[in-house]
Length: 473
Image (cartoon, helix red, strand yellow):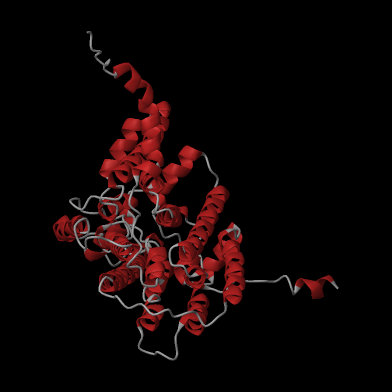
């Protein structure tokens, strides 16, 4: 009896390869417009899977390791011609095999990261091309609104199971080429330090990551309803986000999703510059890359609340970074943490990445990475001036391009961080014509900040008021 019932509880999630194929087939079935084969929407649906093979290559490759010095000694002894010693000959053979395997692994890793950079470049070009698209016909998904909602809920349940699977299940998944294979992400520095400061367990970090994923999904739906005036577009972007293999691969890694969740909600609140600045500053204080959106967003609000946006952005970012610095100071680790941060070559393009850093730029001299960073910095500055004025559609395209551009010069697994820009790209794909979506002009009579400032200044006006002169006859 119990054996018969247990067969219904023996549920196993698909491995990475199966998830890739089935998510692609389901995405085509739901979002592909078969009546318009050569539409931009169809090209986007297919091309969004472009980076999946590269990520699968990286995840299936073992982490690079440095051979022990004994192996180098064995190779040196073998080269001296001392072939009469069976132990040395055996050690040389073992070393030669292991070194060849390590070289092959490193070669495949470089192929995977090169694949990601080329695919990211195509995504970058697609974002710039979106700036020239004016006519955006409404192309609804092939599934009804209720069907999308049900399917999205089912995907949330499955992805939550992926995030909270036990360590034994994770080990089994690694052996069987599962969804979660080896860790890919910046856990080495930023997240490990944050987890240590907050005293969070790995289970709590996974829970925090799942909450971030739910925040992204809810933000996509709310933004579609409020600013696209199309609830179907919002839920379509949310379902597509859950269906893509990138979300399944990094669903439990908080560093991939937490800043983007805040950025999505900052765009939801774009009509209120103060709230949007607070949220974006919070994201920038948590991780570095949201700060790169500041020139773009200030230009977006230019003449419509740019000063207050920048003020609340800096206020929020300073508060977050100040709190972290205070915590380090109380522990007596502030000087050491600052020193370690400035020793990292991953975000400093003028430093050659060390051999133990995984990525395309590993072992490549900094002279080749500096021009890439200079071109990227010039592009970020250019977004502050072009195009002008900016609409919400311009912000979605340029913000996606800015975040994609970080993949080209970031040395620590650059190209892996698809979730840094994926929600914005999906909003760009499903957006309607947004030519009239701009921040509202600030009317002093109706603005809360003007009224608050007047309320604070009212007592001082009474004290500083000049007494009126009376005529003495």
